[in-house]
Amino acid sequence: MNKLKTERMITIKLDNIKVGDVFKNYKELCEVLGEKVKSGNAKKYQLIEWERYFVYDKKGYKFIINNIYDNPLEKVDNRQLNGNIAPYINDAELLLIDLMLCSDGELLLPNSALLQTLKLVNHNYNIYYGHNRPLLANGLNIDLDHVNDYYNNVNSSLVGNLKTIMNRLEKKKLLFHKEVVMVRIVELDSNSYNQDGNVKLDVNTVTDDKGIERTTYKPAPIKTKETFREATTDEIRRILKVQRETMISLGFNKDDKYNVLYKEGLTYKFNKIVNDRLLKEYNILRSYTAHHLIYNNDHLEEERLELLDDIEKKLIQSKVNEEVRNRIMDNARNRSNDASKILIEYLKKDKDVDSKVIMRSDSSYLHSYEILNAYLIDNEITPKIANDMFKLEVKEQKQTEDITIELPELM
Image 1: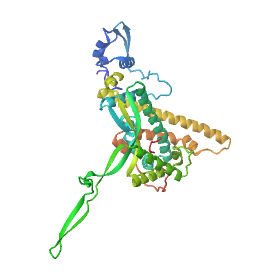
Image 2 (image 1 turned 60 degrees about the vertical axis):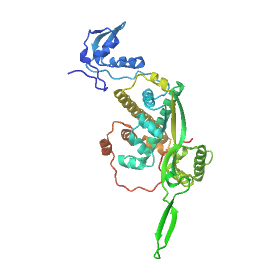
Image 3 (image 1 turned 90 degrees about the horizontal axis):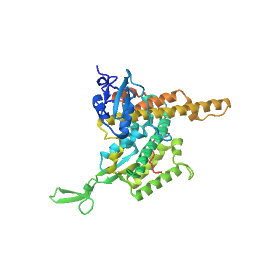
Image 4 (image 1 turned 120 degrees about the vertical axis):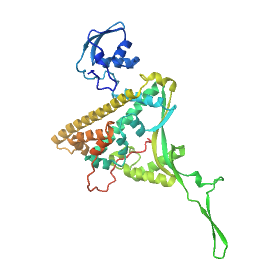
């Protein structure tokens, strides 16, 4: 049986080579191994990958096989990243480039769509981002505070990743990016009006018992439709006005930051008041921030390592998703360790301990993150596995407004 590389969907035909074989050049070795001929950084990473499976010497263009491992060496990410950039940024950038090359020169997408398209999260993530969080906590049998902590920390990190990716492409003059406010509005359907722009009328003619025709007129039933579009300047002003007045009504003064609503657990109440007013006063169902991407099609192809075929794309998507999950757990472990240290110090000094410190130092905290990671981020999760994980328990729930949901991103 052939020795095949199992971690990748692309197979390396190791049985086609043996110790002592000499190949006149890189292309010939690729043909024997059943590998695609690559160039630039893609070729560099391919050669590094081969070193996990066999040892070779290079003499000029020649490749000489010195040893073939029975088991591949452990994979090591050899890329050197600057600062604290997440290890999956390069691959996610490639996926964004691929997305842009498959479209017509511009895109208009909210954070939720971009996060899912770049495989940073799975389809469950956005379903429970808003007011469904208590349902998620119940279904996965974990603490609601853990769910809120997870979303507050993970979402800010992932949105920051998106901005990093877009900023990198902007610096290379491959992309122009701007954030725009979108609105979902209710409009009167044009069918409700006649050609002069007047409301259509229904005509009703009846004959009374004396044989006289009597005609009455009334407005035709008004039809409505929902539309998504970029907000006008006046609409943005109205949205800001309603949001600011709602903040003041909830007791936040001018020095309070917008994000304090997360900490105080008032975001559900805040958004309900804002959305109710916007609908009543301006026919706006909701507002949200989207990314308008205009890109340089002529040079995008040069930027990516190679034209991504379906198999290679899936490999990168899987790698991005795995590294996202690892990064989330690393950050959670750091928070838990820090909280445990603080808890010990405060107990020694007989000081009051913040509830968040107690929550994060508890052993169930990391367990909850592992479950949420699998359910909300892992792209390999199947509907059956998700259904098996999600088991609602019947329990009494207090009526509360302390629910964290998505804020309109206007700041």
